[in-house]
Image (tube, rainbow, N blue to C red; front, side, top):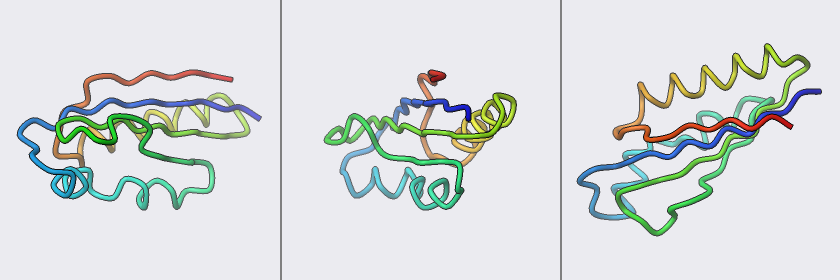
Amino acid sequence: MHIAILTMTISLPGCRSLKEKRQRMGGLHERFGRHPSIAVCESGDLDRHDASEWTFVVVGASSRAVESLCSEIEDKLQRTVDGRVLEATREFL
């Protein structure tokens, strides 16, 4: 069993309310939380309007599968979120 923790920090320039922040993040929890190998939560910057931090725990039978899922999450986030990814860190357990 291989496990990775992917943490993504996202800038939301011009965001003025928590409601707008939720709309701009576009339901990340629902989108990624459906996958049986991924757990997701908003892990930081909860009260800030202009930033958001999300953590994904990815589990797989091989390191290659885990790496692939992490890359897929990063790519999808960059394409679908109305913001800019500032940082993406991976930690393997």
